[in-house]
Image (cartoon, rainbow, N blue to C red):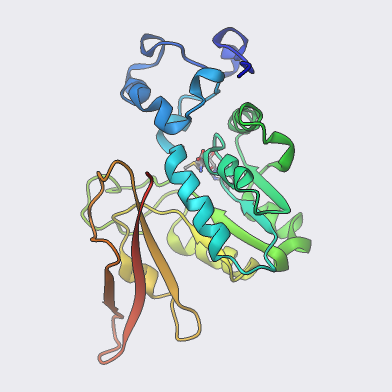
Length: 260
Ligand SMILES: C[S@@+](CC[C@H](N)C(=O)[O-])C[C@H]1O[C@@H](n2cnc3c(N)ncnc32)[C@H](O)[C@@H]1O
């Protein structure tokens, strides 16, 4: 396949890179070099990344399973997919490749990262299937995308910063930064009842379960790659006690899916 760009045409001066060798990378991201084809199978065709995007991009096999899961699971009258935190385009590209959506909006607040996503989508041949919006997703939803809210599904893969996300056995989602679970849940739920949050695997399920009700069940799916992440067993179902409700238990169904 024709190469869309090369290391020499990536605009390095803007902090956007296509590295050809791990020795070109800053030390703190060199550990991701061997994962480059897991992240983007077309990496050698000229994928662009900023140094920060290596930490947060959804690897292609996981993005692809998520895309087919959302495509299958969304009601037929949902025809618009909004990727609220598009990053370097990992998930957005998979949504476009699924062919399920009449319109896809990809929102990213960092213009350099958005430039990477657009370029990477072109590498995968899907750039013209996506409406690209640079800005704050909460603002964009309120001011520019209100008209499509009825037909829309939001996918949100926010930054996972905050104390303990990597170290804690159970990650307190109220400490996730810069957006806590409630910072995300409240505005997205006000926009559409159909939205998906991509959260750390150690997330506190009790905090998620607080948002369920009899009429509003939630499903938590655990995505794995190379069978490496085995926190829960396949097709497991857990019961979560809601604090303060002695006899009532809320159910969140939990499934494990392999990235490949
Ligand atoms: C974890 S990354 C998303 C990765 C993406 N799913 C991918 O596969 O490439 C989170 C992204 O959200 C962006 N971001 C953070 N706050 C935002 C906001 N309020 N609106 C839009 N984008 C935001 C960050 O710049 C970052 O690129």
